[in-house]
Length: 84
Image 1 (tube, rainbow, N blue to C red):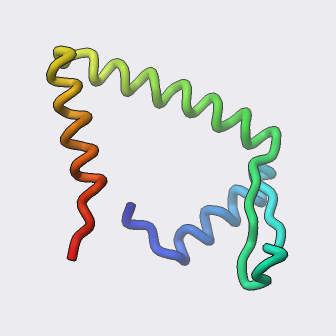
Image 2 (image 1 turned 90 degrees about the horizontal axis):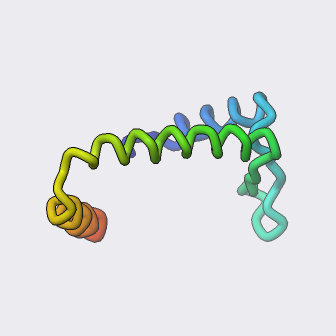
C-alpha cells in the first residue's frame, strides 16, 4: 500500500485525535498499542464503506458477469503472489 511505518503512525494519531479510534498499550507487549474503533469511528466507517461499495458496483457494472469473475480470479492471484 506504499505506506511507511511513520506515515501509518501519523494517520493513526490523527484518527485518535479525531476521536475515531482508541489506543491502549498491549498488555502482552508494552512496545505495541491495541487500537479499537469508537462509536463515532464505526459510524464514519459505515458511511465510507457504503460509498465505497456503491462506487465499486458502479465501476464493475460495465463488465459482463463472466468478466467480473475473471477479474476477481486475477486479483486473487495477484494478492496471493509473494515476491522474492
